[in-house]
Image 1 (cartoon, rainbow, N blue to C red):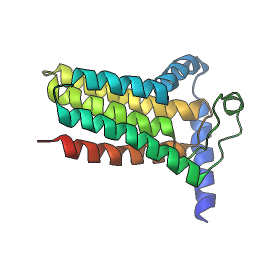
Image 2: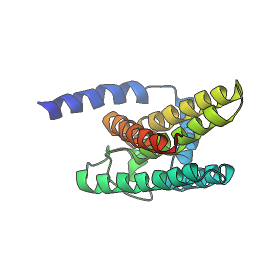
Image 3: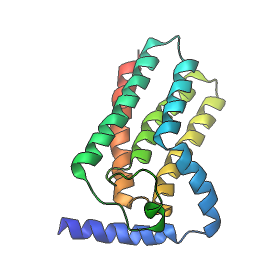
Length: 175
C-alpha cells in the first residue's frame, strides 16, 4: 500500500515538473552540473579556503564530504533503479536513484555555504547570499526531476538527509 502511494506521488509530481517549459532544460543542465559531486568538492574546498582561520568550519567541511560518502553507501544498500528516461540512458556514471546525491550533497555543501554567508557577511548581503544559495539548492533537486534523473521521493529524501547532516554540522561549529 505504501509503495503504491509512493509510486502514485512520484508519477503525479514527475508529470507536473517535466511539463515545465522546454527553455528550462539548459539552465537545469547547468544547475545539475553545479550539484554533481566533483563540483561540490570544489565548492567545499573553496569554502574551506575562505574560512581557513576557523578550524570548526574546516572540520565541518570534512564532515560534509563524509556525508556524501554516506549518501553513496545508502544508494548501494537501497539500490532503487532510476527512472527509465533518455537522460538516464545517456549518463556516464550509473548509480542507484535513492537518495538523490545531488540533492543531498547540495544541501550539505551549499547549505553550509549559506550558513557561513549569513553569519560572516555583513547585512543585508549575507542574507541575500543565503537566500540565493537556498534557491540554488532547490533548483539542483528540481533539475534532477525535470531532467529525468530521479523520482521526486529520491530528491525529497536527499533534501531531508542533507538537512539532517547540515544540522549536525552546524551544531558542531556553533560557539
